[in-house]
Length: 116
Image (cartoon, rainbow, N blue to C red; front, side):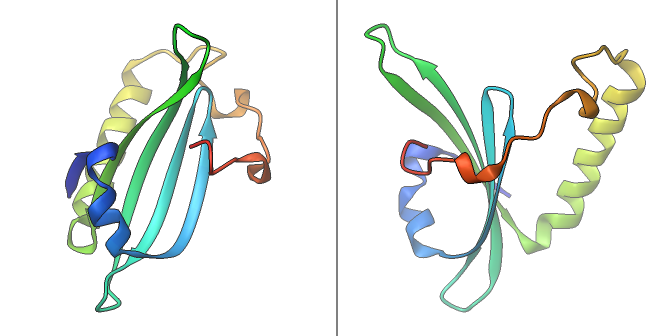
């Protein structure tokens, strides 16, 4: 697994050909799960968190952070993620705003990739 700030990840990101993308809106954040292919046609995953915020002058800017996840790390990453999600669900009382059913689904067709 490789983590890098989005602004510095552009070089590596340009090397990968886009294969598949899944945006997930979650409140003020959007998560992008992007499958990329190397020149050797080996796949890897990038996970990007994008959060919109307002500057003092009223302009919108997007804070972005990206993780590169390679095939050899998928199982360990998924196991670790599942473990901490289970830990949180078991120990943190769920309120009305923390249940998955409380989040309304937003159609993904409204995602403006140029702004993100």
